Figure 1 (cartoon, rainbow over the protein chains, first blue to last red):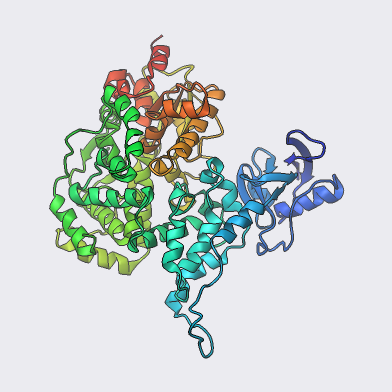
Figure 2 (figure 1 turned 60 degrees about the horizontal axis):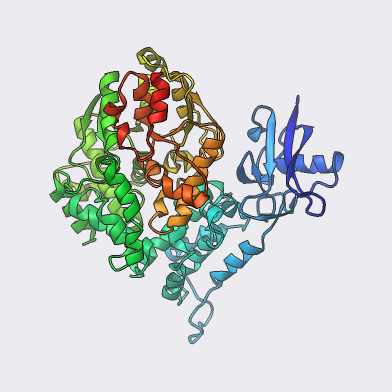
Amino acid sequence: MSETTFKIQRFSPEKDKEPYFQEFKLEISKGATLLDCLNLIKWTQDGSLSYRMSCRSAICGSCGVKVNGHAMLACKTQAIDVVRKNKVILQPQGNFKILKDLVVDLTEFWQKVEAVKPWLMADEKTTPEIERKQSIDEFHKIDRASTCIMCANCYSDCCSTDVDESFLGPAALAKAQRFVEDSRDIEKLSRIKELSKDAGIWDCTHCAECSQRCPTDAKPLEKIVSLRTAALNNGVLNNNGARHAKAFVKSIKSSGILNENYLPVASVGFANLPGLLGLIPVGIRMFLRGKNPPLIHHAIKELDDVKRIFKKIGKK
Amino acid sequence: MKYALYTGCVAKGACRELLTATYALAEKLGIELLELKTVSCCGAGVISEDSPDLADTLNARTFAIAEEMGLGIMNICGTCQGVMTKAKANIDSNEGLKKQINETLKDGGHQYKGSVKIKHLLSILIEDYGLDKIKEKVTTPLNGLKVAPFYGCYLLRPFELSPFQDPDNPTDIEELTEAIGATPIDYHGKLKCCGFPYLMMKKEQSLTMSGRHISSAKKEGADCMVTPCPLCHLNLDPYQPESAKLLKEKLEIPILHLPQLVGLAVGLKPKQLGLQKHVVTPQKITAKIES
């Protein structure tokens, strides 16, 4: 079997100004995981190579790295599956400060998880005789988010965190869902209100990178969507994200097709003068090219049937 | 070849040139299109946040109408394609939901059976029409034109719903680009999010995101970018001056809709493809093609 090139990003803050790549050659043995390969490189070629690892069983969440540009668990990935043109590129997780080589500083990640108060706030006035019980259905609402192993792969590849370091990020929000939808928690509404603020649930772009890179069933995007639904159903609407969603639904209900002139205005809020003024330059630019949405908005044919569906499903 | 064309909202609104280009290209290639005029918006992943059942039911209605026509659906919007594929997967994997939806649809005279095929124009051109046949239709090979493909999230993720074999390494737009004589270029932002879904929530971050992708395409030598999703186009084209300002860089990279790029190669004129409607004028590239 031929040797594969492992192109690994190196960085030692005490001597390097910038990260650089170093190439190692290794024959990938049958069944070897990426972590096995990293270990072999460290043991036989360069003992100074640094990375995190512990359980080797995709439970501890320590060995998240970027493989060919995407975050994965080194211990859960068969090395042979990620060889491209006889090469594997390994980098530290994104959106973090690098401590050394493939080891990143997770401080911010943990601070954000902590910020969502990841503990049960049950009604302490009533002490249950044995325990606070849940039905199977109630448990199913939270068990998927509970499978998160805090590997930070979602955070690493999150496009919103990439441009906004204040964003709480997918892992913290998935954790928040686990408590918002916990039948025993009595702080649901205050949690939703908190999560609807800047840097919270409405600051996700839906890019689905988080769910794609998640090695468990936690799938953060689904949890963020679930939190948004909870916010909309609980009347926490005083923000651009919720206004946008409500205006969108209203527009489809009234004409079957989106009114693109109405939506931006309703999203920023009719009383938000700076927000409205911000829409003017792009509006003029588009108007001058004839790219503006039609000034007279036409409904679809057979709108009545669509309205009937809205009525039947109860969104009036 | 005949399809039920699902225009989506944007091709009827701020990207009407996409619809113009689609019809022009279809005619040129001999693809017959019957526009779905009685169907609603797919929900764009927004309606499902308010009510998942409502979003699935509205999409099932669209599917049922296409089934009644006996035609597969052609999408020209990456977001519609992703959202509809997801709705179909939801319904097809849940008999109870399907029954409940059909109960709702019944009074409107529709029933969703499950046979509908939903494809994006990109997949139709490659899988159904075929690259060889496209090559035969090329009258103006776009030699020397460097094209940066911008795929858009909804065609890529989640992988199980993506039309691409390896969604982390898709090659469809590249293959199509090569078939019409142009050169696809690789760049950092190719598979990233355009930022459009939260433009109204986080304008500055959203436009920084799109700006970085344009900038990375430009640094790799792109003459233009091409996207199969008009929502991506909306963040990349009309807002490009704002992105340039945020990045403090000169960008000026034209953002083409997929059928516009192919259209230029099969002999359609820029005006027939609505290229004059773009905020970043594609004049440089049309001049390059004509010269």
